[in-house]
Length: 305
Image 1: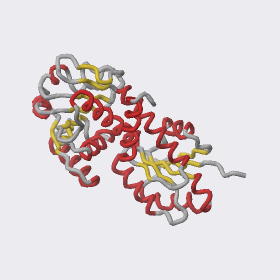
Image 2 (image 1 turned 90 degrees about the vertical axis):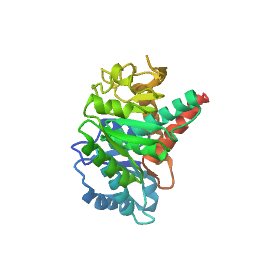
Image 3 (image 1 turned 90 degrees about the horizontal axis):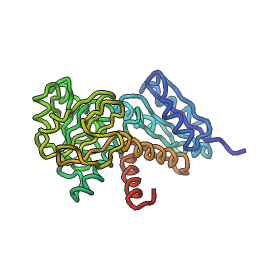
Image 4 (image 1 turned 135 degrees about the vertical axis):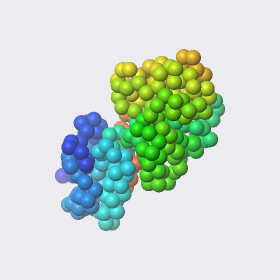
């Protein structure tokens, strides 16, 4: 009898996301087991319980998924899980806390594609301002953009000290340089937007963080992207389905939440399928998500997706 495909899903939170459970089942896993309240101290023992019970053959049909709401903690839990394995008992592991890794990857890939279409270049040397940058999607969007060569400003409405702290902690953890900027007042927001090439809105759902008047201060703006699908839009003038649509009274184009969400969905699905189908163990985090999102968009552009 063939061994079933099993995915063990660990989260520090009270429950695993139903979205991620559905995605895992749709990727082919026959048994999907969520574990809640898993702190980083429990990861090593749980990982070893997963690997030693299935034998060298069974591990190729076994995976671990790490969720939660903390983008940095999920990265630490992923590393600890990988280090707890002992060859040949090695399984695939994927992290995507609150969908932050795949959402941020999709967002940056969409922005990069829009820059290429409209201006013939990517993110290298561009100034990117991330509104809501201290949240899980915002932090990882900052990191991916910085790794792609952008000058990244993490904006936080709680003020400069909090923004600089979040930028410093995130930058050190992932080996990039981020600048913290204050988003606590109209004046500080306007100052940060003055020479921005790209604006990313990663704040809470249902909250408009930039009005049309705010955008008028971003005179160099090329692309604005918003992950908020709950009215009102996070950035005034961007519709949820917009994908490179001109943004009124600016020289920029806008990318909306559902356009990003489609790429996020395809990215997460493809990563889970890769993990399910692979005969060798994989470690999947936001760099792999970004590469996958880029590939999907390239296929779309060529009419293959």
